[in-house]
Image (tube, rainbow, N blue to C red; front, top):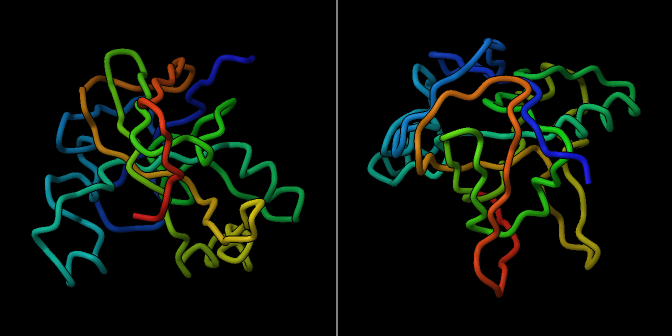
Length: 180
């Protein structure tokens, strides 16, 4: 098996769909990506913040698999790292297939996967039809979003392109990820 790795890292201090690719990002335990609009102990996503501003932030960081970009290219859409709002773009890891509570260790940083990211209509500003293309079905026919996973920062550290990702699975029985 090829070593899972970081392809790119991105951050944006404003609530834009597109995040700027950076040389490195700093993850802060219990907070998120330093300088990112979605960092914080409580929910920062604008829609959810209006509904429940004191809810814990289960979306401190967004990871997406570069293989999705390959799949979109096969459908005629050009999507690059950071354009779907992710902080970390990965390769060689089935992030959508990870069980709830999986930990991803990148250097000294540890991310706990909390759930799937639901695609939003703003993805269509990047490429027409991108939102719909980010929806798939499990083998049993139930729909699921394939626009990445969300997580919380358990241990901080600096993350950059090329870093290896170690996967630490939770104890069994494993639970399938659901949207957060």
